[in-house]
Every structure is written in C-alpha cells, then in structure tokens.
Image (tube, rainbow, N blue to C red; front, side):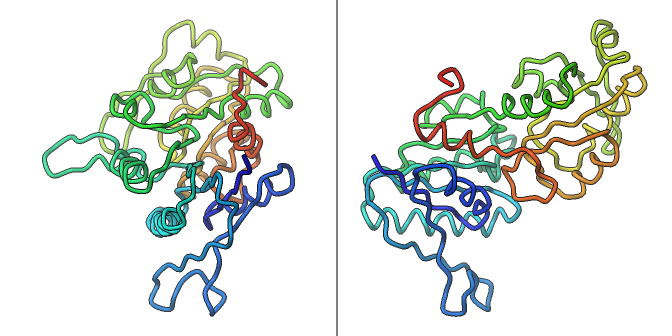
Length: 293
C-alpha cells in the first residue's frame, strides 16, 4: 500500500529527511495567496494537495507551537476525512498536552485522552504512533490504537559511538520505570528546590565513571540539573545528558551549561538536536519493530 506522508509545519524537518531516504510520497501543508500559512489576523491556513487515497499518515510535532499546531492538525484531518481516505494514521514525534493525562479535581480535563478520542472517534484515525509518550502506562491508554515508540535505543547507540564505557542512569522514578534503568528518587523541598536520593550501589557505580542520564524531555531542566550536581558530588568523571524531547529553550540552555555534552533527538525542530530519529519513523511505518531489525 502506497504511503502518503503529510507533514504539518512543525514536522517539515523530519519529512525532508524522509523524502531522501524512503519511498514515501511526502506532502507539505500548502500556503495561502500571500505565500504564508497564517492570515494577517493570525488564523491558520491549511491546504493539502492530491494524495493517492490509500494510506495517509499525518506527521506532526507538538512543539514549539502546541496550540497553532493542533489547529493545523485538525484542519488536515478534516480534509482527509472529507476526501474519504481509506486509512488515516497519525505519527506524533512529540505529543502536545501529554502531561495533562489525568483528572485531579472537578472541572479539569484529561487533555491527552480528549485529543486522542476525537482523532479516533470523529476523524476515524486508525492508528496513532507516538515517540516516548509521557502518559504510556495510564489505564485509559488501553482503549485506543496507540503504539508507543521508544527512542532510547537510537539515543544510546549514538552515545555509545563516542562513549563506549558509559554508565546509563535515570534521573527520577518515572524514567526508571520507562527505561528500566537504575536511577535517583527525588523529594521536592519546596516549589524551587529538589533533593535527590540513591542507594549505595548506584553511588558506587557512578564514582569515576562517565554517566549518561536518560530522560524523555527537558522543560525547565530543574531535575536534570539537580542530577548533574549529585553525580558530580558522587565523583562522576563526566555527565552526559540524553534527551528525547527538548521542549523549552531555557531548559535546554541550562542542561547544555551543566552537562559535559547533550545528545538530543530531533523530535522537535531545534538547532541543538543532534540525533536523527527519522529511521524510527520509516521503520515503524513500514511495519518493522526494533526486534525485527
């Protein structure tokens, strides 16, 4: 089945790479008569060219503009639905609103589930691929055709080329669970201060080593900065940050200044991104899993 990739504006950097290394038909969101994707009043414009009509995959990143990006994505899905495309899928490299995945008090919304429910129930999306989804493991996820795609193997492989003796750890309990790594636990002292704890075995393994700290995203960079400080106190020779999603520039700058080196996947278009995940997209859309490769 021929695959049409429709790249939203936030994912064009990945679509351009895929167009050179795959057999996919890659399409980009068209521009208006002014040659722009926005009207003067700030409204979003979307135009899709002719597709094969068999299998359409919308490639989208939820950053750096989550709200405008969701409008663009919704318009694209609406066009595909109106054209009665047989098989519509989403490939989301960074999921917007992914941390709003539970309701804690009356009047709130589970934003992550609400988005997925609309995409699948209203637009008829058959499958949603997500790279390192923050909400994987939540009970509600089981109701939807979601495939979580870990990027850890690609990130590790890039790091190991330069640091073959590196010791990988996790910065907190969430990353310990997601990546099956030894790591720290944290206790928040107040709104601004975090205290890190680890067992004696981790302390021993960190001492004198090059340590690779793996996490799914950087926002403020507070937890990662605290882990770097703790690793230095425990005698680490070097500390390397290994991140899937660079969400906030301030956090990225903080981590670059704190760590000896940053390995950052290009799930979001950033000048600091130095690990390409386009092969991950290509392989999964072609029906290959990491175990098959």
